[in-house]
Amino acid sequence: MQIPVQITMQNVPRSEALETRIREAAAKLEQFHPRITSCRVIVDETQKHHLQGRQFRVRVDVRAPGHEEAVSTLHHHEDVYVAVRDAFDSVRRQLEDEVREARGDVKLHARARHGTVARLDVNEGFGFIATDEGDEVYFSRENVVQPAFEHLAPGTEVQFVEEPAGEGMQAKRVSAGKHHFEG
Image (cartoon, rainbow, N blue to C red; front, side, top):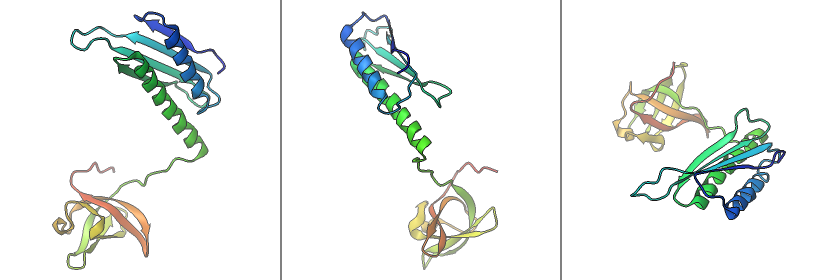
């Protein structure tokens, strides 16, 4: 880390054990992103509630190349060590995601498409969806999420994900109902 970890305690008595735990957690972050430039940690005891007892709030701000904003997280817990652990776990996951994305390891999810049921063969258990682009996409009974296949009818608006199948593209996860249709 280019700049030493900055630890601020607000409404919390200074604790060498707590500061050591924070410094160790910050050092471990470098395993997940080797070019961290700074790490700032704020530990605060929030207002005491007579029914809930003590509540600690931990905020971790991390800066690294490629992050225009700091990776930041805020966690509350009645045990300050649990709040520290949870806050650093959250930052670690964000850093891991950022590194995976930079390497191109992030799986892209298929974008939902919209259309209307064009034809159905209820006896055979398949149908076709007419899309806004003018093509038709095959789907089977097994690919209908909701309502049941038997409740679909020509003209029903549906949302689906198009995926490759044995004989071309096929509609998967077909669902009817209220969807946000983008123009």
